[in-house]
Amino acid sequence: MLLRRLIFGAAFLGAIGLAAGGAQAKPQVVAGPGYKPECFAPWSEKTKFFQWPAKEGPYRIALVNGFVGNTWRIQMIQTAKAFVETPGIKDKIKEFKVISTGTDAAAQLGAIEDFINQGFDAIVTIAVSPEGFDRVIKLADRNGVVVVPFDNILDTDAVMMVNEDQHAMGVMSAEFLLKELGDVRTGKVLEVRGVPGNSVDRDRHLGFHEVMSKEAPNLEIIEIVGNWDDGTSQKAAADALAVHGKFVAAFTQGGSTGLVRAFMDAGHPMVPMAGEGENGFRKYIVEYKDKGLKGLSYGQSPGLVAISIKAALSALEGNKMPQMISVPIPVADYTTLVDGKNYWSNLTDNFFTPNEFPPCDVNITAVEIMGKSAENVK
Image (cartoon, one colour):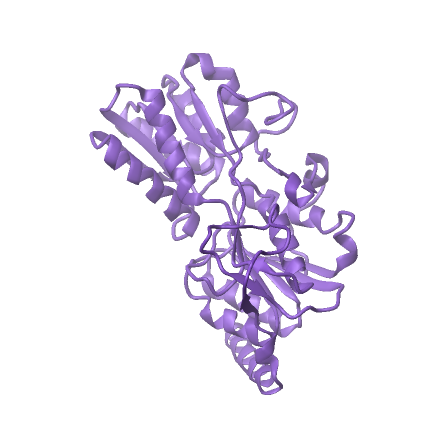
C-alpha cells in the first residue's frame, strides 16, 4: 500500500513539474570535454556528456543503498557519512540522508521516488537490479534531480554513472591465475560469486569466463555464491572443499579473507588466488606467499560513493559531466604489497584498503571512516 502511494505521488508530482515546464530541468547532451577530466574521466572516447541547469546550493543529497549485509556496503555508507563532512564538501550540503532497502528492487525504486518527491536535489544509489529504473529516471528528469548509480550500475545511458571496469576485473583475475598456474591446464578452479542479479557479479563473471574458456578450456570451474561476504564465502568454500577435495586456483569477487580461512581450516595447500581489496586478504597474501598463496588483490573501492557524491554536486553546479565516469582499478599482488602503503597490519581484516583518489582530492582516512555507523539517516 505504501509503495502504491509512493508511485501515485511520484506520477502526480511529476505531472505537475512537467506542466510547469519542468521538462527543461533534464540534462542536455553537450559536446565535451567535461569538467575536471583528471577526476571525472570519460569511460571511452564514445562517452557522451551531460549538462544540467545550474542550481544554487547548498543541496539536499540522498544515498539509497540496497543490500547491506557485507563489510563493503557497511564501509561504503561509513565513507559517505565521512565524506560529506570534509572541508569543501560540507558547506555544499544542506541535508544528507541514507537508507538501505535490501534486495527488493521495488522497495529501492519506491525510496528513490520518495526522495524525489521530497525535493532532494541528487540521489546516489547502488542499484539492486541493472534494469527497471526507467520510470524513476524520467521522474528525476522532470524534477531536475541528478541520479547517480555507482558500483552496481544500470543497463542504460540515460543517467550519469560512476564505476570501475568490472569486466576488466574478471579478465585480469583470469590472466593472473593462468600466469601463476604455468603449464597446469587441468583440475578445478573455485569461483566465488557475489550477490546474484547485480551487474557487478555478472560483468566480473563474464570477463573471467571469457579468458578461461579461451585459454584453458580443460580447467573445470566450480561456482559458488559468497554474496561478497567473508562469513558466507567461508562457509560456501568449506562446503565446496568438502565435496570436490582439491582445487588448483581460486577467484573470488569478495569475501576474500573468508575464502583463505576456508582453505586453512580444511588443511588444503595454498593455491594462486585472485580476490578483492580487503585488508585481511592482503595480510594473508603477505603471510602465505611463500607457501603457495600467490595472490592478486584488485580493489572495488567503497570510496566510489565519495566520487559519486562529488560528481552529483558538480552536475548540480552546472558543469559538463561524462555520462559514464571511469575510476581506475587499484591493484596489488604478492610482489607489490607494502605494509602501511597498500595494506595495514594494524587495521582490521574487514577494512577495504583502497580509499584514496588524489585526482579527485578525495582522501578519507581509516579513522574517519571507521568512526561512522552504517545506520540509516532518516
